[in-house]
Image (cartoon, rainbow over all chains, first blue to last red; front, side, top):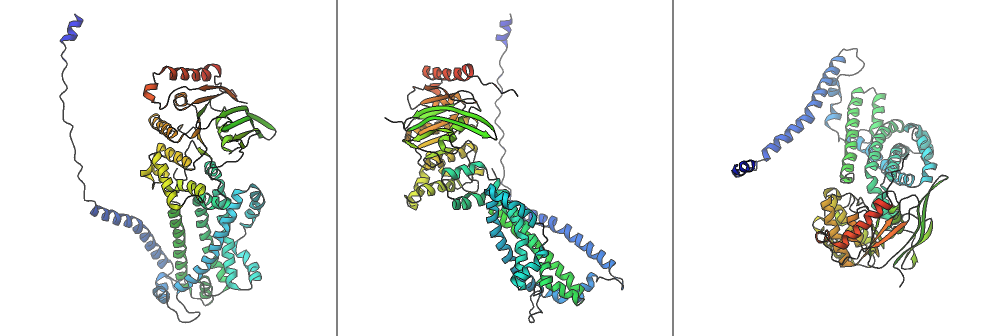
Length: 296
Length: 265
């Protein structure tokens, strides 16, 4: 009986439906991209613009009374208009545009920071690679790195007997510590596998340094360089205030001595923007150089 | 005839402070030219240590590794290693990774054009020529391991050392790579030592299987010859008498006579 029923049960053929094909139409993306870029720019620029506008308004209100000790933005604009509008004028040795002063300071930073980068990476590699170098040098570095930049200046002036090399030395000694320490950490973190590869290939010390150590530690090295460039920009302004010359730091000191407060405010804006650009520049170079290295 | 590679009474112990742990004890093994030997054992039995000793990456405590009757105690390109986790340099492309090895090993003996041809030939051998400009992060795990094998082969090693080369791969990719290794071995006749913990893999690929006892002080428990004709095909072998007998012998060794006891602490 039960067999019978099974035989009776007709197997219904499942109606074969043709699979629905959904055609993906290629959308014209171009206009959308332009809109997207505009939207991105707006998201990045509009909020800070609003914040700056509010700050200016508050500042204007706070400093507009005749007894106020600091100038309001309107006064800065009127009195320091030459500095804002003409960054590149050149009227003789001590009367030059702020952009020139920034460039002169940047040149000092470039020399000092460049030397610090070279020496710092080399020393960091040594400390990261050799356990005895680390035991000997690391405590010394840890103590020296806490010395404030300007504390080096008198010693440096005594040694170099000239203001410009002294300022460069202060940059160097300020920015080298984070470079050394970060490089050392990066070198210590090189995976054992990469070392084994280099041992099997019998790479010599120099080849290992160039082909494995530097690229493997590059993300750490660039972290150190980025901290270093920030510190050196901090230090140069302070050093120039004391050593004189034509840098942006001395300009501020000079303006203070002749009570030109609006000029100081404009110079501060220049310093801030330049420091920001330096930081972004090093970060961008780092991102370009280390592309792909962090991915496993 | 003298052996191509001879492991002569090797002991290895690691010292940590005053505590000395003996890992390998009295390893004696000779390997002929062109032979494919697998070393199998439970995890922690020191098989990777043994491979590192042959590679020269760690030093023996006693005894010696002799390659063509010469003692070797430091690493070199004539004993190329394929690492378990490929260890390709991530900032170099596939081509540049192999070029690093080729320009170091053949920098003097081959011209630039010859080196290029040699790199491409080794990439072709592992069927990776199409990805020569990709970075390791852009290719799959199996492909990375292929490039790792190509890099090792490009050093033209006397002995190819494979350290659990397929351990991190899925079963299908693993089978493809095993076939690739068999194919390369038959074409080049390279002397190969492979560490594995996969019984099928050991029987399929090897001429001889070296079975390790459990640590501490592990040693070679048994050496099994695999008398299967080459070329071997995995599908046909799955019902082959000899294959099954060898497989059973290894399984019996690992799971009956030297059962792995998890250290109770």
